[in-house]
Structure formats: structure tokens, C-alpha cells
Image 1 (cartoon, rainbow, N blue to C red):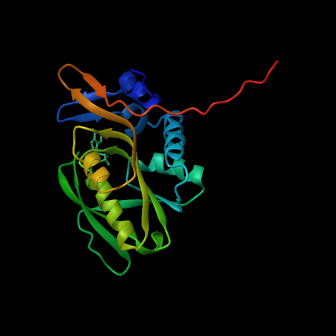
Image 2 (tube, helix red, strand yellow):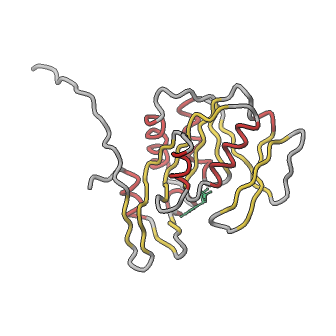
Length: 208
Ligand code: 5GP
């Protein structure tokens, strides 16, 4: 199987933890490998070619690096939703709820009203997609503002959890650079889902 750069990096530097957690602290969730983040951003931009994007939205904290790099490529503002245990909707902020897969608790997530507008076409990005709770909450915030979701771009989708299927069935344009099909904590093995091959256009070499 031909692997892409992110799948290769996960095999090289990732670790599988008990409870279906993939740990990629050395390049995304603690230390940030700028070259990998840059490649993730370019690949997401390529996959969303032709899609209108006026804003990139993520959730604190680990989505911010990818979102910033992508915002730089599109030259649009980047917004990160904040997490809070207590936030309620008010005149000044949009609030949604998300159950955190990694922390096993309910979080409120919010964005201050001026940072999401009805005219916005929002590309939502995150490091991981598991049950899709974070993505759904971010989509909800965009919709509360009257804006439109252009798509959801993810670095690592855990395909054995329900988020990807749910978002695709909702008709959401979802792109995940690496999709984990199976991972085994005891054996430390991981299998990725085969993805459509990147189409390369026909080009002519210069005649010598
Ligand atoms: P979801 O909301 O889709 O259930 O979970 C996505 C969120 O949980 C992501 O923002 C990510 O931070 C965290 N997450 C879920 N699964 C994993 C995992 O296997 N490894 C890490 N590092 N984070 C995860």
C-alpha cells in the first residue's frame, strides 16, 4: 500500500495508547513539526480546491497550528472556539456543547459574535476526528451566526469511530488526510484506509 506523508509520520513517530487513543505528541499535539503542519495545510487546500473559504475555524488547542497554517495559505482570518465548563449563550457569544472524547466530559465551546458572520464561508479544521462531537459543535456555531460551512478538514480521522460516517451522511464535504481503519494497542499495529489516489495531470516533457 502506498502511504501518504502523514500516514508515514504516524508509523514513524506515533504511539497507540489504551482506550483507542493515538498519541502524536512529537509532531502535532505537544511539539509541532512545522514541516508536517505545512504539508497538512497544503494537502487540505488542494483537497478543497474551488471551495469558497472566508474563514478557518477550529477548536482550542490542538487544531490551532493547522488552522493557522491554512489561514495563511488562504489569507483569511483564523478563529478558534474556546472551551469552557460553564459558558451560556449570551448577546455577545455563540455557544454549543461538545462531549470530549479524550477528557470524557461535556464542554461548552464558544465564539464571540463578531468573529463569525452570516457572510462567512467557513472551513472547519481539527487535528483528530473521532465521534464528531467537536466538528458538530463547530458547525453549529457557524450556523448560529447564519454562515455556511464550506467543509471539514481533518488531519487524522479514526475511521473505526462514528464521526466520519455521520458527517459524510449529513452531506458534509469531509476530507481527512489519514484515516485509521484499525489500531491495536497490545500489538502496536495500525491500519489505514485506502484513499483515492491523487490524480496527476498528463504533462509533456520538453523535447530535447
Ligand atoms: P470527537 O469530537 O470527534 O469525538 O473527537 C475529536 C477531538 O478529540 C479532537 O479535537 C482531538 O483533540 C481529540 N481526540 C480524539 N481522539 C483522539 C486521539 O486518538 N488522539 C488525540 N491526540 N486526540 C484525540
